[in-house]
Length: 258
Image 1 (cartoon, one colour):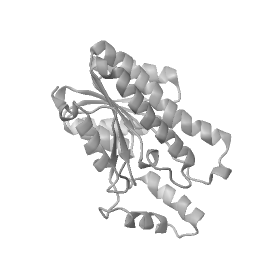
Image 2: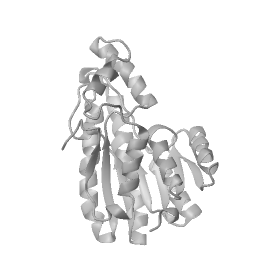
Image 3: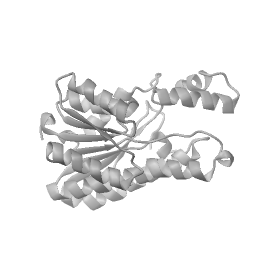
């Protein structure tokens, strides 16, 4: 399918990695549904895309709510006629020692990072099965390959996303649906700026020192950009990746190898 014919739905698309993915698809000519719990920022991103002459709609979406997920999918199909690509990007990160986590923080992280992926993928799969084709791309993390200190709950959910991706890929292959995951490393976004302050405090460092230390462990020698992730997502959605499914692709600058 030509890139200018694709219908793409991106969750958590108002800023950061999600926004970069939405913008990348739009630049390739796709029609994009910008979905985010922050309706105002989602509309701003959609408006930015429309300003380039591309088609985009904004959808207020909390992936913790099954009704909202199903309604968002139906709005995409109603507006554009089908869904070719789902990018499950919505997620949160809480960094702290395991002993300091409470049940509510566990539940909230699982609801968004893992059950949110499930809800959106389920809705998309039902639509794509009827179409006999499509692409589902789940944003996992390097922490879904190797657990990291202070990220125990986040790691647990992202390991879950990788396992879910593998299982779903096998179930949906017979319908011509590819399911893959992308595992970013340290992406220089507002979220990581906030995380750096938390990690610095936990490690007895000054703000900026934790992030700088992690940067030194990146073989390619620089922090990752949202656009680095978007490029790999765009590849997985393309015909060039037609023979890839069930994979969890590292995009970490060399920090993760398996």
